[in-house]
Image 1 (cartoon, rainbow, N blue to C red):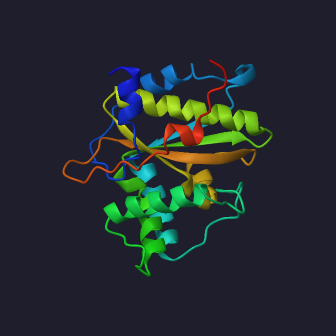
Image 2: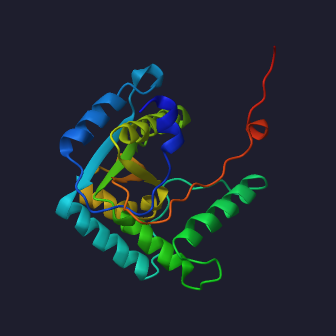
Length: 221
């Protein structure tokens, strides 16, 4: 699989099979991903790979909180900025309607928030979740580094025939996650990434992207 194919085929999969992912594959991907860009070579990410019974127990605890309508732990960082306006709100609304409509959760459903939270807290059935943390002392540059690292991980997973779904939802339950993985108080949970093989026979959704002219300007000849 070449780079263009990996980028084009990467999407946030929300229905995974329970087929185990070999540890050797995960180690190969994560070792290769260390070549991701890192300003000053700080490599600010700290990743915990959770599988098997520890993941099953974490899912049970998070799902119980979600189904109880738990609003989550005190936020360590805002998921989205205050005062988000068009065109960002338009893109967000369109993608959310597509995404959860494909999962059979309609916007008018009064149980929609709880159903969405419960699906997320099960990591959509994925047998592996990577939890990416940063030291609290890190700034915006290092958060950008972590984003480039995670994108590198997700593209390498495609090269291995695997899919992924980045999940900021886990930050809502960061205290539960932190206890499960043993993360110390000096770390902030950036997100989780569900990893696995896509379940066969489910609708494949790809959310749209803005036209190039909306997000890119060429300056010069």
